[in-house]
Length: 244
Image 1 (cartoon, rainbow, N blue to C red):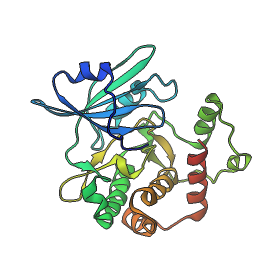
Image 2: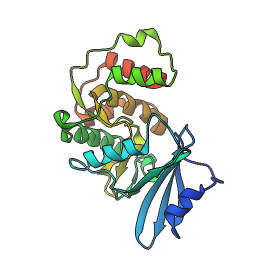
Image 3: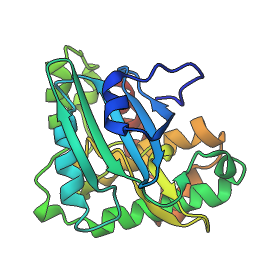
């Protein structure tokens, strides 16, 4: 995923959903999906739009948001929909900015510590027995197969999944929102949320820190989360992420 460059064309559907609000592109993913911030008299909303994707739909994300909001801070869904060609999701804004906003890129220790504390809180608050969604290794293999992705045979030798939590599913740094005081305001982009080993999230979060803040932040992150390093699980789940 990447922050859009100048010149992003606003889809007609997004214009209609935003009404007369000002639109600012804030994110673009590898599938062509776009996220816009809509600013108007009614406040700030986020409009997520993309081509129809059979694997990760806005309906699935909306269901996960509705479930998770009972336990932790995530965006409230305002509207969702789709047709044969496109799909969309409109949500309320959480207070604050992404952990990769310029102010937090300039204060990486604050941001990384908050990401660790926030992910631990996320894992602690969401109850595994009540979660109807799964992100375990077998599910990810099945999803890859449906997409025609041939995973390396070595990945079939997965570590035991004996420390289950409700994982975010995309715990990269941009999906943590920080308030003005540097504390976590909440989390966004929960389209893959589901039960899995906690290292499925920890490994991806640690990998994203280097992308966004540079090397050397894994220990700070794990200390803030409150867990000792596990090189085997870290390596496995990073390879699984990259392969899928």
